[in-house]
Image 1 (tube, rainbow, N blue to C red):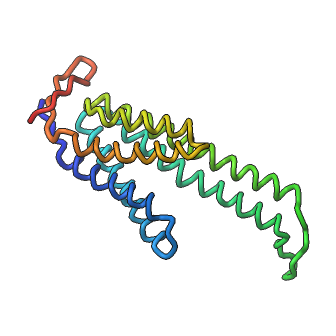
Image 2 (image 1 turned 90 degrees about the vertical axis):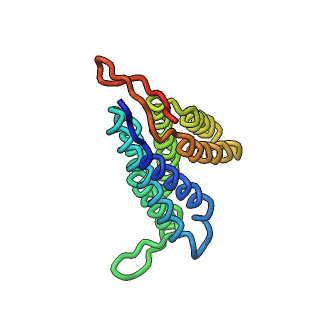
Length: 205
């Protein structure tokens, strides 16, 4: 059975580029919000590409795991960020009561909340990377594109060494391989059905 993946290839490629650009420039003041939105659009495009890939190849794992990764980042980092801000707010003694500022100094509750927020951010990032790794490994299994596996490998190494600068560089390499994976993904695949409904995928040029 012939499977046409041209639209998924295009959407995934454009989305991956937007995600990488957003990660680079999103930290620059005045353009951060715009680029951050661009990165989010890129994530959505990649998600749509993986949804189409799963529908056409009969395996929704890449889409499902990548969706988990996005939900963890959006929801988890929001909650962790709120905890960090509340902790800092409390530690700064900026709590308001009856319209007047109250001087609290360094409160134990604020310190605990700040620590939990920071730990939560680290856990969330690691969990999001974990789901991304599973998504790209699944994409490799159903397409045979080796760059998807490379993406997962560099994500893993990047997560392990994230505490040092090397980890950041490896995560950047993973983002580049993600672009290469969609760029090298065949537009046409031949799938030989099996009893389980899956099949062997053969690139057609």
